[in-house]
Length: 215
Ligand code: SAH
Image 1 (cartoon, rainbow, N blue to C red):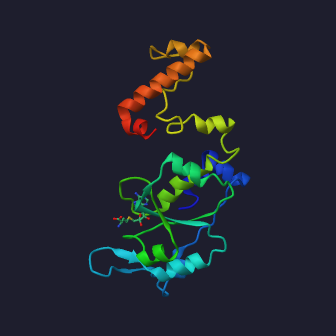
Image 2: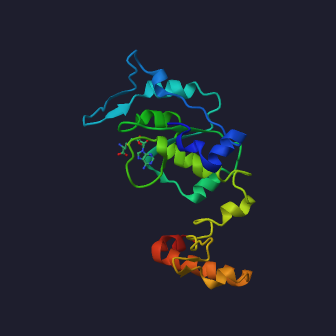
Image 3: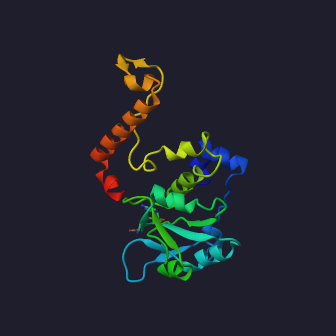
């Protein structure tokens, strides 16, 4: 599953350049028996298996520099751009990302290793790997020299501008009879900026009023 989607695009190129790197640990290498078992039935009953603590603690203990440990889980705080910014303030930071399977991991692991739970949204995935790739992708694109265009390339995005992005247009200036808004072809930077701000405010008010209240 790794690097998976992280091998493509700007994040993949950054990986090749060495702007970031990763190691994958297969929990099954720390299984409790020769059958590769890492999970067991839930105490208290109920359907669904739980990842046992020993394979996880052995895996975690095998890591020299763990940094902050994150467990992807629907119970965590929901990842947003502000949090992504904070995770990347130190561009040399190391993170250990635990991808859950089954119903999740034994609570004692979370307590023992002081693990931060992080969600990527209010829905249930079958495993944490996609969540980990969401986390890495969103962090890596903020690292220096990953996106062309410098700081501006990341600062002009939705959420970074205090709302959602304005409508985007590229060539041709007329397509199927639809014209690009005149102001964008005018070359008048002040007017363009005002138009974008007004469009962004309107879209944000309509779709995500919660973002405006947050300010
Ligand atoms: N029993 C859990 C869901 C388990 S889903 C619950 O009700 O909260 C299996 C694994 O997928 C989880 O351990 C977690 O690592 C991952 N996962 C599922 N949904 C996720 C989400 N919204 N955000 C981050 N990780 C998620």
